[in-house]
Amino acid sequence: MSKNIAIFSAKGGVGKTFVAVNLAVSLANAGKSTMLLDFDLMAGQDMGRTLGILPRNSIFDLIPILDKPEAKETIKTYVTKHKSRLGFLPAVTDSRQSPHIRPEIISKTFGLLKDLYEYIVVDAGKALTDSMLGVLNESNLILLIVTPDVLSVYQTKWTIDTLQSLNFPTKMMKIIINRAESRGAVTWQEVKSAIDCDVLGLIPSEGRNVGLSLNRGVPVVLDSPHSKVSDAIKTMSK
Image 1: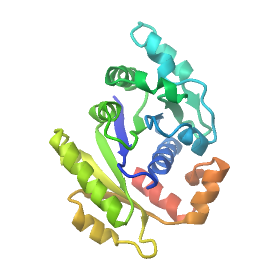
Image 2: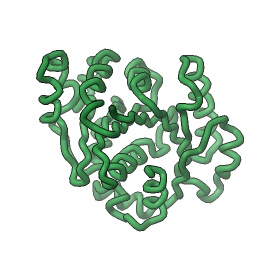
Image 3: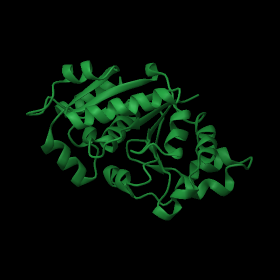
Image 4: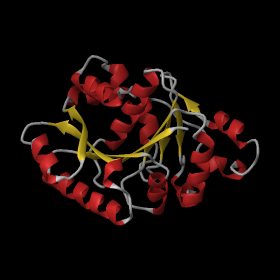
């Protein structure tokens, strides 16, 4: 049965998609069978562009077959393969499809994929919607992406409090600090003291390498494999 990792942030622009893509690619490069799911319904094709691929199929396209006996075998044909051996499947390929991605569709999709992959990494989006909560309900681990600034720290604390009120235990939540120790930022120690949650990883700020990888459509762990940011992500995946 797969280990399901949901990556979430209530604040946009903190690198959630970047972390999800590079963590998933790092796991796949380490020989783990890994599926990357994109449930950020407001981000268009951002994840596909970050991977440098344009998927033709989505979970929306799977809806008519989810309850059929052959669905577990058929779902493989809908998955877009990345050169890292990563499997990729977005929730939608068109914003008009988003209302159809309901919690029961999410549950059925995970039910089909859980025996096919060791890891399922999910971009859960950036809003506390029914679809996002459906993703979290299927997850074993929630990674909250935070940048070292007051607004991101405040919104992360609010997110943790909200998830606790919805009966998600704090022990299944971990923090990833992206752009750690960038100039003028709050230190990671201050972030840790402000947010009552374990820090799983510190990703340094390397704007040039990250910017080049995004523009090329090549994950940074492949584009700049010996950079500090790639080393941090590979350490985190271990």
